[in-house]
Image 1 (cartoon, rainbow, N blue to C red):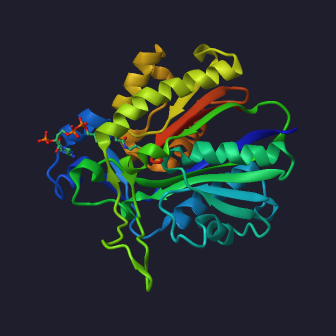
Image 2 (image 1 turned 30 degrees about the vertical axis):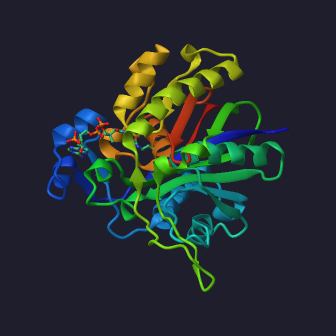
Image 3 (image 1 turned 90 degrees about the vertical axis):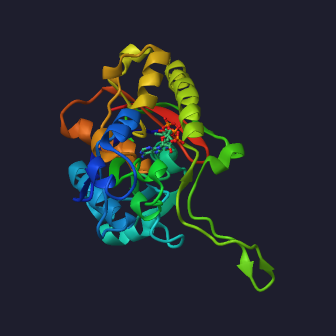
Length: 323
Ligand code: COA
């Protein structure tokens, strides 16, 4: 068995910044309401690029950092809930955009937990020796599925992508993981419903692509399940939170992170947060945060990090990464 060493993190976010005050011109809201309940100040919104394009920019930066040429990439997994098309996969379009001609490419759908699930999936391909390297991407253009007239959701989300390259290596890599789904509560967060509509059956009702969410339900679920999942990976790795340099949670809401910190008696400065600048970028939020930690020089070889995601599905999960 090999280990999968993570060698480069990168991010890309669209240029356009939309502040809370900008949103107060579209819906009945305020900077004070949004910031006090979520910790979000502003987010990026795509004015032209679709998901494959934001992902390709993060991916290109990541393979350059990793010193790998595009045609050496063997596997691309893209986590997204806002694909350009339902077919082809966003990963196949990224493959074309970055010239990774030999890569096996597919998407993985696990909403805001998508990057954690995708990294753990790629890790298995590397560990078994099926592939020598992989490009793992989390990317979204959530702005195309947001209901811009719903103040309960449109203030929360943002666009962007993060990527990393993993390679076969010795030591480190993903040293513990804990992944879960609960389909019983699938309707707590939905987008893009396509009804059965053919000459033999009319399901009735329209399809929709707009995101719907039971915010309170998601809040309660996250504050209950994320602490359990962090505790589970620490136990599996047989280490304590003091051995962890940073916990990188899905960047949905700073109040959720504060509750997790309080419940677990882990100080807030161990949790990396940047939702003030990007909002909730769904599957992109964790890799964007990892890229920022790396760019700011806050993490180095041998550091252990916990990444922990939660979202639609419902899905949630954590992993401990040793750099
Ligand atoms: N601006 C002003 N008022 C708003 C508003 C906004 N953007 N959005 C909702 N409100 C109003 C509601 O209409 C409600 O008004 P009412 O009492 O007159 O009916 C009031 O604020 C309280 O709404 P509520 O939904 O109870 O607020 P909350 O404290 O639960 O906060 C969320 C709402 C969405 C911020 C919070 O539930 C949350 O963050 N949930 C998790 C969402 C999440 O992270 N989703 C992604 C998971 S991957």
